[in-house]
Image (cartoon, rainbow, N blue to C red):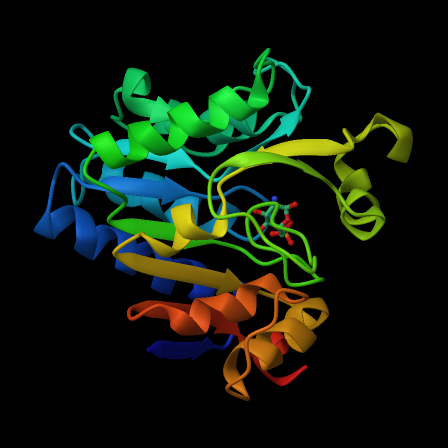
Length: 242
Ligand code: GLP
């Protein structure tokens, strides 16, 4: 079941998203969170930092698994998703960093890394809430539009469209890695609850595909979320109305 909350602004979307995570942490202090990168959740992470500082929530007993990481890219690279998570959340809250996980962008054997990552998620009891953004092409994590999608965490090629969209963070388009390790569709769908954030008119087309009809297509990976029983989409008016 997809529940939709349409907010007036990016700021309101960020607050609503943070509320979902805060409620989860209040109900279960040792929650396992699935976390996402990209520009969309930055505001939500900021709200969570403030709630943590105010003593409203704690990350002390939280375990986290991030969706994806560029490959090959060192965790110390300022565009790595490990770096992003430290800078946007982990360095500013009371989380135990040894319990935060991001796929290893330097793994010698990415297939083995993927398998071990899924096993670790399962051993942690599975993900309680998975945060997701969506790509302009409907990708979730780095599961790009394809005829066939992967179930488990795996190495994937990035589409030109995604490389183009993410080039703004790198010195040049040529510097964007062409591959990534990403959770697969089963890894994502096995989360008990999924929180999708979408902001801006450039996400309208895929948001519409998620909410407006009943079809699922691997060519727009986020439509697979319709098969999950507890998804909440928090978006702003621009993403919802175009
Ligand atoms: C990135 C990430 C996704 C993210 C998406 C949208 O490439 N792999 O997890 O949701 O693309 O990014 P943004 O929020 O910057 O629009």
